[in-house]
Length: 438
Image 1 (tube, rainbow, N blue to C red):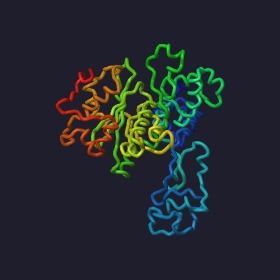
Image 2: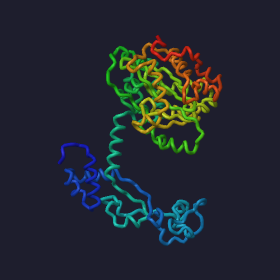
Image 3: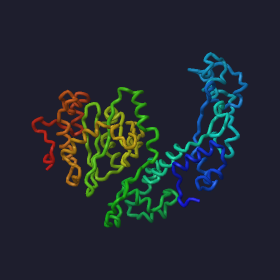
Image 4: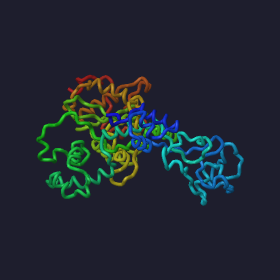
């Protein structure tokens, strides 16, 4: 047997090939040096469910599909009677009618409840209209790599669960209680161990920080700690493909791209940048740490300044990357007090910064003033605002020799810029050098 734990792509492709050749689990396991029970678990863990029909008949798992005499439009609008018989009157030939039929009883293939649990070697798969189970080696490898990656990236709590635990822990810490004492007395409610709570506080996920822990503030900071993700499932329903579909349905919606600009390694301060694609204006906010909570706090402050109606007008859609600081989208999307939806958050594909290219280009102006490797420790929000005033007042060729500040003022009004602490700089006074902030 193999002396390693994890299967690779070659192993999974061999399993798929063995299933196609109707080999047993033991026979497949012998080929790749695995036990038959391991092959069984692997297949059942990565089954792909397909609801497909045939070339001439749609997917229909009803037990009565072969002798059904129902007629009419059970599914209502757009009733489609099969692929070949467009004028057929029988509902059994529609891909939707069975979902609305009162006599519907689902039939499942009895062969799928016993080894090999798949349709890979089934000779009737091309004529079958029932639900199918298939094992695909490449897709199984992708799923395995995704799970492995997410397990190393962060926590598996939703934003709601995190807030619930925060509501328990924060008041007690502020009363002077230790983490150990809190866990000992609230174990059933918290359901987290001490080490995990310390990690979450260190990552800035709770309302309290290390400064509220009397003993921890004197500890030397540990190096190389990876940021913690708030919600590992945050990308579901918010992918770049979902963003493109939303844009097709709402072609006139304004988009704001969001990103972070990091300091040198000896500084924990970081900038949050918001780029209005309609006019190229960029806002930047200084944060003490690159955490999800710090991002949420900025959006809450913006809503307080602008009001809900104006906030929704300026930030209808936000496109960002998959950094750990952006893994609490529900807190960005919804008002903390009422739960009202105030914006929509979508994510670029991994390692595809070009999908939000506008903000990446504008970051070049920031790097003229704050070159890579520069420490942000000397920065204040006033200095950041000054830098952005000079950048937003800089005229662009693609804006017909207008500045982002001028175009934003035309679109949304000068009073909104005043609320956002953005001011126009005289063209002759614009400086895009490090000397601006010295």
